[in-house]
Image (cartoon, rainbow, N blue to C red; front, side, top):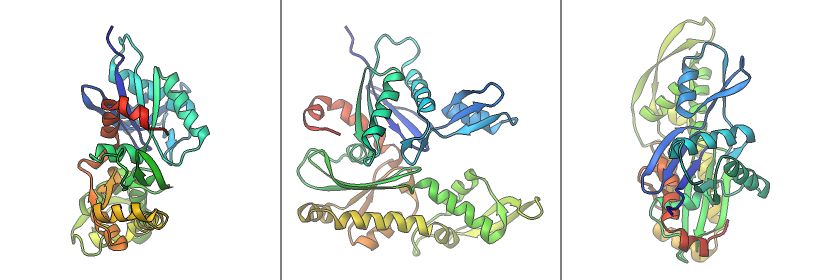
Length: 334
């Protein structure tokens, strides 16, 4: 009899990434639902929800059922998980899947049970919860089973996870509700305060990607930005520089770097020595902010490396877990 399919899910605040055994990463869609006010029900998830909301006639609301790395709306999260599981496996599956699900390292026992229950209600046969930093380390090629210390900083959309890992367990960790979305909101607010211009979240993200930097010594680019004047309501175009973006994102960048420093201060000396030798790993979509690695390196004095394809490192880590599930089940516990 064929085995049930194994699925790994990075249940992110902004994005959900799905890994399927034998296929790799097959889905990467917004952690988003579209709620129809007229029908009083959720009518779409992921890319479909985003598409409908972009062409919204006024009857749809955007729902974000995950906030700060935890479930804020259990029922919508359950339905969203069900949607992604069905989309990953097809509607005619014969076996319920085993699911490896990533969670923030600082979640409570109640939150863990809520995530597990949502996955079971969505159709899982078995559920394994793996802390996001552990999955990110595995996805970046780190052997988490070894006794030496590794530090991972996973910058997601709504939360940053900092953890020191040894023997497949988290020795020291900290979670802060700062991430890639914080950078976007900081840019949006800066443009509003300095230029009196309304811009959308997508425009703020594009500014961050194209001319953004966290480091004073990086990038001297500029971009033309079009928005709506706060006072007149008419379209207006301004020019913004990389230096201004750095100024805009300085606070959330500082919060991340300070949290990394705080975790290092609480790390046992032997493991801290390992980290000083091997460096700090950055993963997650928010880690791609230009100059972030340099800022953390300057603040800590430790080399900082950006994972390959950092936005999918956590999901790839679920794949590594699945491929080594017999070994991991014997040695690993949440």
